[in-house]
Length: 120
Image (cartoon, rainbow, N blue to C red; front, side):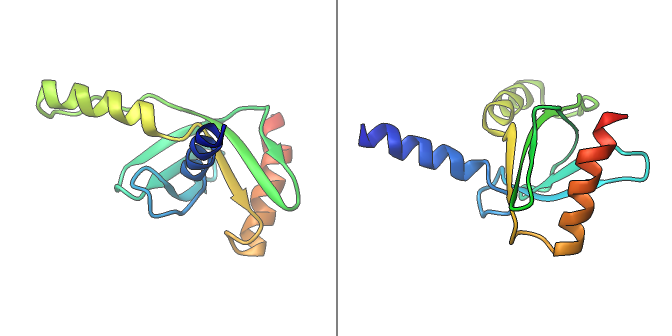
């Protein structure tokens, strides 16, 4: 039982924003057209969609995200296939954003956009 609890806590830590984990989301941005993107500690940038089952509360946000396909890269085919499979396995699909992880104004703007922008 304690092993399962430890695994659950470890997995939840990977879903947090701005940790030192290599696959952790460092920035979350919305452009003027409403397209969201995330940047990772490894330097990768991905376009995402936020699904409607996300939870937006004053104290925290739990975003259920889906990654949009990116254009294929011109790297070594065998190594690239393994790296893509590892990336798809380890990247977070839900983001937990706590009230103290962003500036209050930025977090308020994000809550407003998530509450009203996703409905359009």
